[in-house]
Image 1 (cartoon, rainbow, N blue to C red):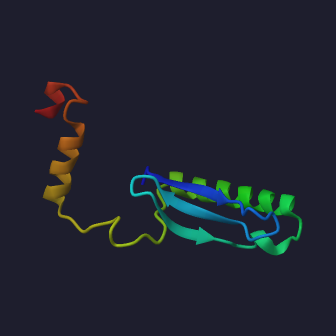
Image 2: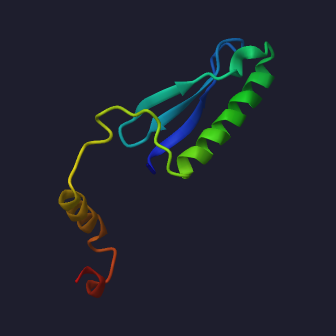
Length: 101
C-alpha cells in the first residue's frame, strides 16, 4: 500500500524506549510497532542507529509490496467487478479516451 510508511519514535527522555512503527498516512493511524532489539544497547545514539536500520528494512519490505498485519478496516473484501470499476474511476481523467474504450 502506497500510504504506509515506517517511522521512528524517539522518546523525549533519550534513555526511554525507541521503536519503529508502520503508519498509515491516509487514516492517520499507527498500524504496528516494532521494537526488535532496538533498546538492547544503553547508549541512546546506538539505539537510534538500530532504529534507523530497522526503519530501512521495513521500508524495503513495504516498497516490495509487503502488507503488515493490518486491521480489517484497511483491507476490505471485494469482487473483481467492484475492483475493476474502482480502478476505472481512479484512472478517469488520467488516461486518454482511446485507452478508456
